[in-house]
Length: 124
Image: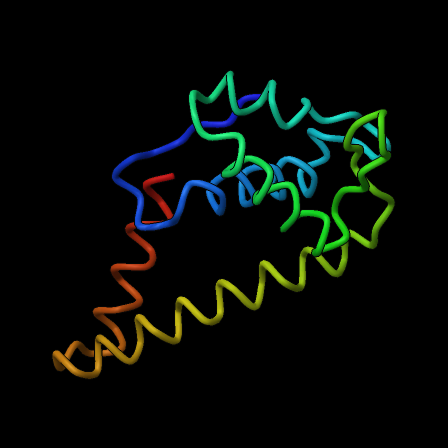
Protein backbone atom coordinates (compact mmCIF):
# COMPACT_ATOMS: atom_id res chain seq x y z
CA UNK A 1 0.00 0.00 0.00
CA UNK A 2 1.36 3.38 -1.01
CA UNK A 3 0.52 6.06 1.55
CA UNK A 4 2.21 9.43 1.39
CA UNK A 5 2.34 11.63 4.47
CA UNK A 6 2.73 15.36 3.97
CA UNK A 7 4.14 17.42 6.81
CA UNK A 8 2.88 20.57 5.07
CA UNK A 9 -0.74 19.36 4.99
CA UNK A 10 -3.25 21.03 7.26
CA UNK A 11 -4.78 17.60 7.94
CA UNK A 12 -3.51 15.58 10.88
CA UNK A 13 -1.46 12.55 9.88
CA UNK A 14 -4.11 10.05 10.94
CA UNK A 15 -6.67 11.74 8.66
CA UNK A 16 -4.22 11.70 5.77
CA UNK A 17 -3.98 7.93 6.25
CA UNK A 18 -7.77 7.58 6.55
CA UNK A 19 -8.38 9.60 3.39
CA UNK A 20 -5.82 7.69 1.34
CA UNK A 21 -7.07 4.27 2.43
CA UNK A 22 -10.67 5.38 1.86
CA UNK A 23 -9.74 6.56 -1.63
CA UNK A 24 -7.96 3.28 -2.38
CA UNK A 25 -11.09 1.39 -1.32
CA UNK A 26 -13.36 3.62 -3.37
CA UNK A 27 -11.15 3.24 -6.46
CA UNK A 28 -11.09 -0.53 -5.86
CA UNK A 29 -7.30 -0.51 -5.39
CA UNK A 30 -8.05 -2.19 -2.06
CA UNK A 31 -10.64 -4.90 -2.52
CA UNK A 32 -13.24 -6.35 -0.20
CA UNK A 33 -11.69 -8.74 2.37
CA UNK A 34 -8.15 -7.64 1.45
CA UNK A 35 -5.85 -7.54 4.45
CA UNK A 36 -4.29 -4.22 5.39
CA UNK A 37 -0.79 -3.94 6.82
CA UNK A 38 -0.67 -4.39 10.57
CA UNK A 39 -0.80 -1.22 12.63
CA UNK A 40 2.82 -1.68 13.69
CA UNK A 41 4.03 -2.45 10.16
CA UNK A 42 2.30 0.61 8.70
CA UNK A 43 3.62 2.83 11.49
CA UNK A 44 7.15 1.55 10.82
CA UNK A 45 6.81 1.98 7.03
CA UNK A 46 5.55 5.55 7.42
CA UNK A 47 7.98 6.32 10.24
CA UNK A 48 5.16 7.53 12.48
CA UNK A 49 3.76 6.68 15.87
CA UNK A 50 1.91 3.42 16.47
CA UNK A 51 -0.79 5.49 18.20
CA UNK A 52 -1.33 7.64 15.09
CA UNK A 53 -1.75 4.57 12.88
CA UNK A 54 -4.06 2.95 15.43
CA UNK A 55 -6.19 6.09 15.47
CA UNK A 56 -6.46 5.99 11.66
CA UNK A 57 -7.53 2.34 11.68
CA UNK A 58 -10.05 3.05 14.45
CA UNK A 59 -11.55 5.85 12.35
CA UNK A 60 -11.76 3.58 9.30
CA UNK A 61 -13.47 0.95 11.43
CA UNK A 62 -15.88 3.55 12.80
CA UNK A 63 -16.78 4.40 9.19
CA UNK A 64 -17.35 0.67 8.53
CA UNK A 65 -14.64 0.59 5.88
CA UNK A 66 -12.48 -1.98 7.63
CA UNK A 67 -13.00 -4.79 10.13
CA UNK A 68 -10.52 -5.92 12.75
CA UNK A 69 -10.27 -9.64 13.40
CA UNK A 70 -8.52 -10.16 16.73
CA UNK A 71 -5.25 -12.01 16.26
CA UNK A 72 -5.55 -11.93 12.46
CA UNK A 73 -5.47 -8.27 11.41
CA UNK A 74 -7.54 -5.64 9.65
CA UNK A 75 -9.47 -6.27 6.44
CA UNK A 76 -11.42 -4.16 3.97
CA UNK A 77 -15.06 -4.70 4.86
CA UNK A 78 -18.04 -5.29 2.67
CA UNK A 79 -19.85 -2.00 2.26
CA UNK A 80 -21.98 -0.01 -0.09
CA UNK A 81 -19.65 1.97 -2.38
CA UNK A 82 -22.53 4.29 -3.13
CA UNK A 83 -22.45 5.48 0.50
CA UNK A 84 -18.74 6.28 0.26
CA UNK A 85 -19.33 8.05 -3.05
CA UNK A 86 -22.12 10.14 -1.50
CA UNK A 87 -19.91 11.05 1.45
CA UNK A 88 -17.14 12.21 -0.91
CA UNK A 89 -19.68 14.14 -2.99
CA UNK A 90 -20.92 15.90 0.15
CA UNK A 91 -17.31 16.76 1.07
CA UNK A 92 -16.83 18.34 -2.39
CA UNK A 93 -20.05 20.31 -2.00
CA UNK A 94 -18.95 21.60 1.41
CA UNK A 95 -15.58 22.74 0.05
CA UNK A 96 -17.19 24.40 -2.96
CA UNK A 97 -19.65 26.17 -0.67
CA UNK A 98 -16.72 27.47 1.40
CA UNK A 99 -15.04 28.67 -1.80
CA UNK A 100 -18.22 30.41 -2.96
CA UNK A 101 -18.59 32.18 0.37
CA UNK A 102 -14.96 33.31 0.30
CA UNK A 103 -15.28 34.51 -3.30
CA UNK A 104 -18.32 36.62 -2.34
CA UNK A 105 -16.37 38.19 0.50
CA UNK A 106 -13.64 39.38 -1.86
CA UNK A 107 -16.11 40.38 -4.59
CA UNK A 108 -15.17 37.68 -7.10
CA UNK A 109 -17.75 37.26 -9.84
CA UNK A 110 -19.38 33.89 -10.49
CA UNK A 111 -17.82 33.75 -13.96
CA UNK A 112 -14.36 34.33 -12.45
CA UNK A 113 -14.91 31.56 -9.91
CA UNK A 114 -16.06 29.18 -12.65
CA UNK A 115 -12.99 30.11 -14.69
CA UNK A 116 -10.73 29.27 -11.72
CA UNK A 117 -12.52 25.95 -11.23
CA UNK A 118 -12.17 25.08 -14.93
CA UNK A 119 -8.44 25.98 -14.87
CA UNK A 120 -7.83 23.85 -11.79
CA UNK A 121 -9.82 20.96 -13.21
CA UNK A 122 -7.97 21.08 -16.54
CA UNK A 123 -4.68 21.13 -14.65
CA UNK A 124 -5.21 17.57 -13.44
